[in-house]
Image (cartoon, rainbow, N blue to C red; front, side):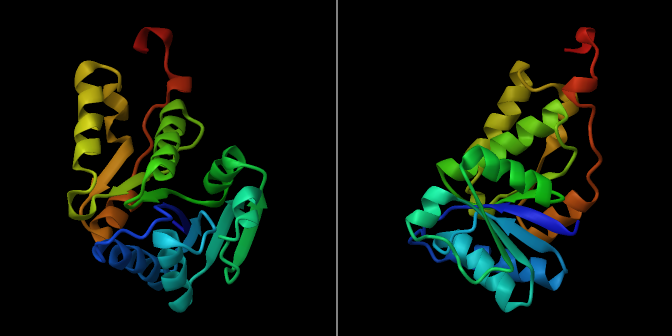
Length: 193
């Protein structure tokens, strides 16, 4: 994995643990020679990931919609900053520029990015690993929901392992490196659907 898209919040929660984790993600990826592709902002966890990776000598590529540039939240000190018309183009660029996806704590936008990466993997639009860093149990309910989708039958058995979950970054990166693509929907027979 040469580059990973990092999905996370642009907010700064009161608990300093979340900023600490964001900084760890940025510095660890840089130390491993893995570039960061992220939302291009300077605020919150996004800015912390970018700043830590840059401080550790890493490559950081931001992809940000023009509206957020206009709102003056773009990070201007990145290796590259791609300005795109909107969110659809932003998520496509994340997929095009990265070799996988890591989601750390975030809100609605982070969830949108995670679910699209999972949906695209399920459909066969990409075969890249999709990781979820479950910091301090932040994603426990989401992980339970993922299991519930499989239990009920809305998530096919061959797709249950698309979401790679770990509580530590090292374990997550190791599991993502061992990722093997599953059979996507576009390659399934009608009887299997």
